[in-house]
Image (cartoon, rainbow, N blue to C red; front, side, top):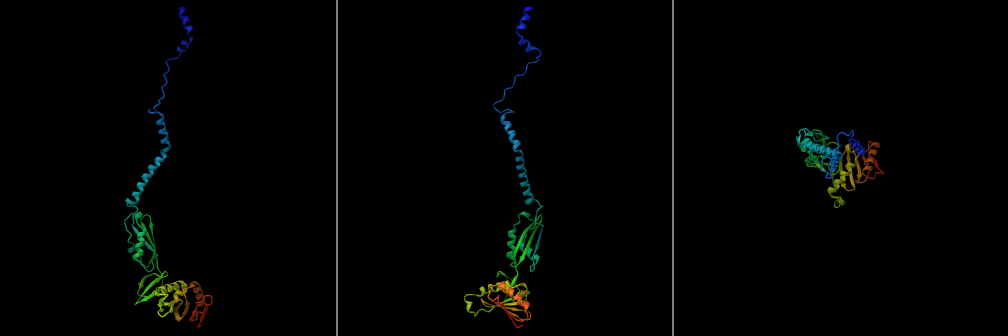
Length: 283
């Protein structure tokens, strides 16, 4: 008995380790160095990347879905198709004439309508049209805004009248002369300048003169008579005449003539060939 007691005292560390220790502690698991386990560094890096890139991937997925869905709505569905075509700006032409010339494909997807092609058809089929704006009126309409050419001069041809705009374009023929538009009379056959200025050149000069006339004067101008490049005479209502001269300084001549008409309303002859020194007679 004494020897056993002595043996326990001689190894006090063994007694302390055994006292109150219960079951022994489990050994620590070794850390994986291959990264193939569920908690390996490779998986952890992947998880971190997905956390950072998740919103970007979701945004890309949404964009793909929206693009595909949007294309179907614009081209494949019946929601955004041409159902109505309207016109505006017509004066001599009728809306029906513009609609027929435009030939807008009713029922086609609105986004696929070629607006330039429609505008080209209107201009080519209706020479009176100077320009046309074709616009999409979402969700179901097409609008045609027309600007017509305005005649500034008429060329008499047989019993009809060819209308000429301010650019010298002959765009239509009328059976009756439009009110307020002067008729051109060319009498330049015997002019010394006839070789230098042919009828086409003189026509453009006459168009320029007519285009420079103030609106109030243009309405009272019955005829533009061209004898040569620098001999243009206007015939006004009530038998009045205006010596215009050449086509140069047209705006200044128009202002001078307007002032003379107001200052001498009963005169029958005006000369604005030199706009800084206009003259009037027959008052």
